[in-house]
Image (cartoon, rainbow, N blue to C red; front, side):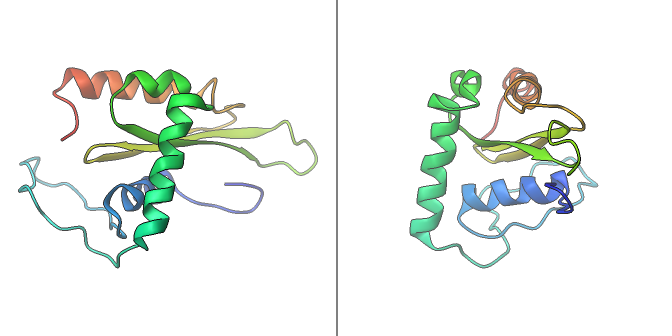
Amino acid sequence: GQGTTVVSPVAMAGAAAAVATGRQVFPRLIVDPAPVPAGTPAEGPELRAEAAAALRSMMRAVVTAGTAEPLGRFPGVHGKTGTAEFDSDDPSKTHAWFVGYQGNIAFAVFVENGGLSSTTAVPVAASFLEELAASGGAR
């Protein structure tokens, strides 16, 4: 988080999933790796359609012309970088974040003491997306 604001990577992946689906999504513990049936509904209240559309557009711009531009080579990836200062005495101490989604997969990358997100978290996200593509990709 930023300063004393604390949020988990799972919560941030959930935020990305909410933007992708247009409604609040609750994380699920996967006990059986069997695929979830197509059309399984998201579980929470809907976001305002205009807000969700605006967020999708801005998150796509981050990967096509912004701080996560190296991820633009992955089709349909939307995301947001974040560099969170955690030491009020030394603002150069930062954690690096990238949260995003591709198709039906939402994810978060957190690099403790990672510095700038574009140089640490984004390459980790790229590695994840390469592995995802190699395994058949998101739906």
